[in-house]
Amino acid sequence: SLQDLKDKERALQKLQKERESLLSKTESLNVSLNKQSTELRKKEKETNDMNGQLNKLQKELKTTAAVATTDASSKFAAMELELQGAKTGREQADDLLRKRETSLQDSLSNSKALQQSYDELAKMNTVSLQDLKDKERSFRKLQKEGEI
View (cartoon, helix red, strand yellow):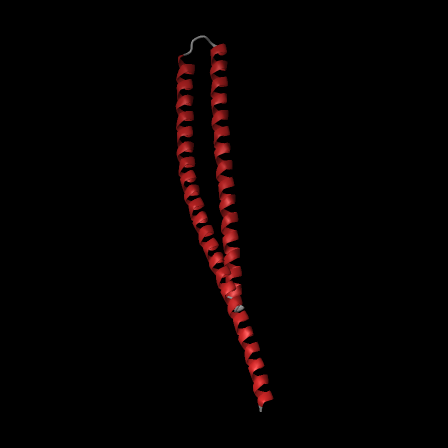
């Protein structure tokens, strides 16, 4: 009958509106997913860059530590020669010992500062890596739940 046809047409229009709404939501979710994927790739690149910087700083730290150790050893050896060759007695020997102690304290301070810088970089890298892993878990969870 005519009324049945009108009811079916209204039902069809309602279903078409629901379909359009679902398509719109799907498109919105796809846009959001693309943004998240882009952000995730950006974070991954940042993490890789930070790892590169960390590796570079580790190499610099090793080189600097080796130079500082060599420098301290050279200064120590030079002071030992001065001490052995000194003939003015205790006053000159005390002066050389003070110089050696200052040099060793400076080397120790430099080593501690370098270690602190290394520790801070390692901590920053760990935090960024954990953030990246958390975002990936969230993304996988949304995929499993069918929202993406």
